Amino acid sequence: MRQAVWMGLFSLLLAVLVPALLLQPIQEPEPETVALVISPAESKPEPQEAMIVRLKSGQSILELPLEEYLTGVVLSEMPASFELEALKAQAVAARTFALRQMEGGKHPDCDLCSDGSCCQAWNSRETIEQKLGDGWLQYWSKAEEAVQQTAGEVLTYAGQLIDAVYFSCSGGATEAAAAVWGGEVPYLQSVSSWGEEDAPPFHSETAVSLERFRSAILAENPEADLSGPASGWFGELTRTAGGGVETLEIGGRPFSGTSLRTLFGLKSAKFDVAIEEGQIVFQVSGYGHRVGMSQYGANAMAKAGSDYRAILQHYYTGVTIETKT
Image 1 (tube, rainbow, N blue to C red):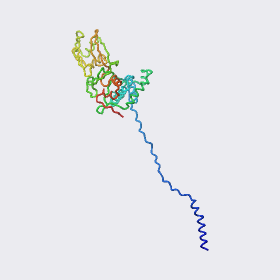
Image 2: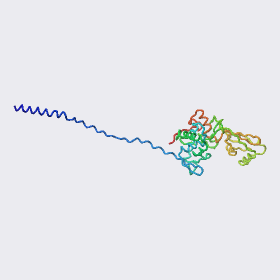
Image 3: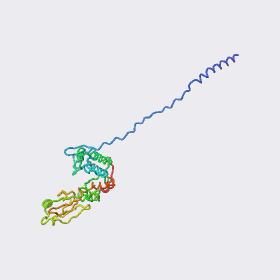
Image 4: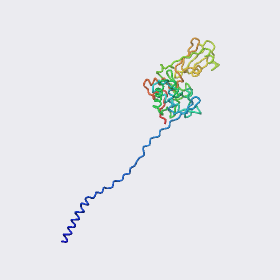
C-alpha cells in the first residue's frame, strides 16, 4: 500500500511539473555583437587657388585671376568673330607668354602690363563691353570658353616655356626669329601661312614724299648718296626665308628691312618699293613682326578644320603642349 501511495504522489508531481516546464519560454541565444564602423566621408581634393596676375594698367596695378586676365587678352589681341579653335590657340599662346613673364619678366613692380607693344594687350570687361556693343556678352562667353577648354595648357620646348610670340598677318609665310631679332630660336622658324589673302591687313601701301624719304635715310646713315634722280637711289635687295626684306641698298649703303619698317611706319618688313608720282611707295604684305603664330593664318586653319593643337604645332616648330598645374 505504501508503494501505491508513493506511485500516486509521483504521478501527481509529473502532472503538475511537466506542463509548467513546457510553458516556459525558450531562451533565445544572445545575438553576436557587431561593431558599427562609420567611415569618414571621402575627402575631396581642395580646389586649387587661382593663380593671380599682377597687371599694370595705366597707373594702377591690378590683381586678377589668370584665367580672367586671359579672357581679356584673347578679346583684345584677336578679333572676337574668329573661329573658336583659333581663339583657343590664342588662349594657349597668351597663357604661355604670361607665365613666362611671371617667371621673370621685364617689369620690377608687376608681372605684366596691358600694353600690347610691350607685353600683351588687355582690356577690362567693362571696356570690352563698350567696344563690342550689344553683342559683347556673346563674345565674352566665347573667349571665356576658349580659355576654359584649354585650362592650364602651355607650350614648351625642351621642357621650358617658350616665348610664344604672335602677330596679326604674315602675308603668306612667317619669319624666323633670327631674321627679325638676330638670335636663333629653334621653335620660331619660317613656316607657310596660307589662307590669309582675304584678311584686311594682308596688303597695304605707304607713300612717302621724296624729301621725307631723303631726310629719314640720311638721319639713319649720313653716308648714303641720295644725289640725282630717285630711280638711281636703290640697289640690290635680298630677302629672308619668309619673304621679308633682309637688306635693301639705298644710296650705296645697306639698310635692313626691319629698320626701314621702323623708319617709315610700315605694317611689316615684307615689302616692295616703287617710285610713283614723285613719291616712294612701299607695297607691304602682312602686319606685324611676322614671327610665331599668325592670327589670321590660325583662323584660316580653323575654318579648314584644324584644331587648336594643330594650329599651335604648325606655327611653333617642335613644341609640346603641356598642362601646367
